[in-house]
Image (cartoon, rainbow, N blue to C red; front, side):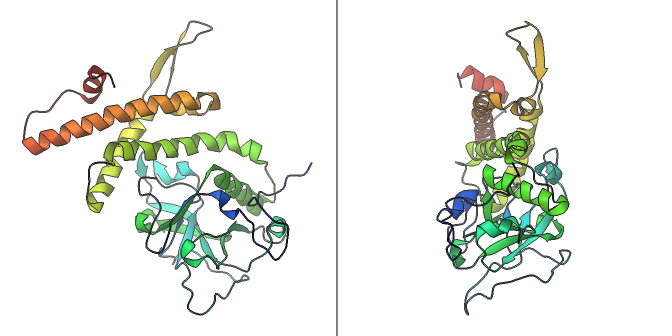
Length: 305
């Protein structure tokens, strides 16, 4: 059976109607003009940003909608298309990331994206501020932008796991005309997606109640990215129930066995509690000028966290 390109669900199969549940591909979108996706969510493949300098990203001739007069479309919008691993070196963001342009396009029934618009990734109802404008990520309009130019306050949307897999499927098809089933992509993508979701839990769990200024929060997020990466990379020892051998692995390695998802989630949440307690104690020490307290792990462990 031939592989079909994924498309938004809830389609009415009426060529003149948009899908009923086309937002299925989004994990989060900004709610209104001026809003943004949760700042605690790290960058990931499929994120959409607006107001990004695009001097190095080509602009080609393609069918394009002319929005009604007075309609404000997303200015200089891009989607991140590089693999999540290519965006960072350890926990440090790379200087440049790969993007494609996102712009208004003619509406076409999603059945036809399978053959007539394979160079586009449909983004239905992308922006609540311009609901009547149809957008696509133009996969052939590709280039690099500086990571520093991606303002988290201008992140319009983030894809969910199904959306990311659909994007990967379409990128592969656009560059090679080979169609890979989502069942082959999911085992490789899901662990990275889980790591990204837990990173949000980590940053919010540690920093969410500290009432930091926007500038201090950005600096603190960079620090917690390092701490989170360190936690996932630390070798852990466990005894194999069948062989009795003591095995060494990291939480990041364990993520690639999808059977470990719940176990990894529990382990990371315990580490979040430990880290949050350590940061809280350090802030108290700085506020009072007192001596440093116990090491984070020991203190939290002594409290039974």
